[in-house]
Length: 453
Image (cartoon, rainbow, N blue to C red):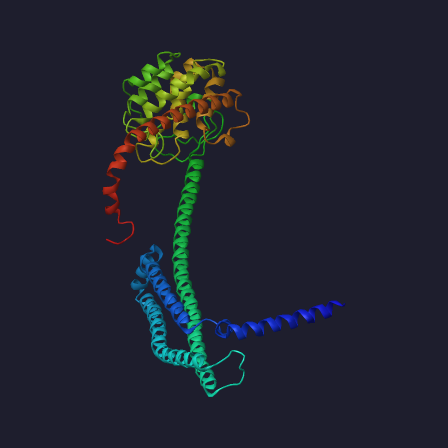
């Protein structure tokens, strides 16, 4: 027997079984083929309406409470467009219209479907009473009435199904439309905020670059060579006077600043106690004592009043283990005391904001004690190292080798002191943290972060 014969035989058998089941359970088979009853369709649509109303509440919260929409509303009201208010009213109206139309359709179609269903059930009950046998196949006038009623009820069910399908599609479209509108407005706010941030950062960078170029130009104009080159600097307070001829000897230098002096500050005296004392170091200490309120910086380490003295004392303490790097341990304290001393000029008068390296080198070069205690090569190396702490690339090629060693010595001691100051600041902040947390809830309402007050 071929496979095709088996397939045909199976189909015939299924047809016979289906016909037999129809004769036994006609109502069940007809209901399965016809689809869900009208009351199930109505209940499903009511459930969809309830879910749609919940979605409307969620979308309304997005359109009213999200911070991006609050910003957009403020911008929209400022420019006087009122586009947002019109759009939200339109969204609400469209959603309300859809729910109202769907409920009206149910209210109109359901009574008619109920009457048809009741008539159909009564006719079927009457037919079951009058029909003698299920094998009686001839159609009676009652059967024709039942078919007509069933056809009308099917039409009502189809209209309800079509109304539900239309509601489902409209529901999806309105949700998508509202969320896309919210996303577009939020995206505009995000782009606006990003543009403002970029503009602000660009302004800051341009300002810094222009300030840096101006400072570099002024620094270059004001720079002078301490030993053997012709000076081209314009005369200004706090620096070596301009000399029009080659400088061949230290006696040729002319200084036009008068520094204040005072007693050596206690932190400096305690730190230098264990180190090699020199007249140059004591002179530099007395100069620091003449400016006791000078900070070490404006916004970084030791920015408090008197920070320069405290910072220099810490650098002295951290320099002691590094003295073995130097050929003469007496050089170390002098270099440390001089490395930031120019800040008494740059952070305390009209020169404020200018680099302190040049004034620091000028001050140490102006001290006669330096030439009395150190040979010319050592003095030259010390001045160059202090002058080029932050401009290493500009060190002359004929600088003594000790210059590089002093740069490393100053840098390591300075970084160690800054690290200690950072740890101290962190400990102070840790102690303040509980107090900050305690007052934080009272600060937030004053800040008005969400703009709702």
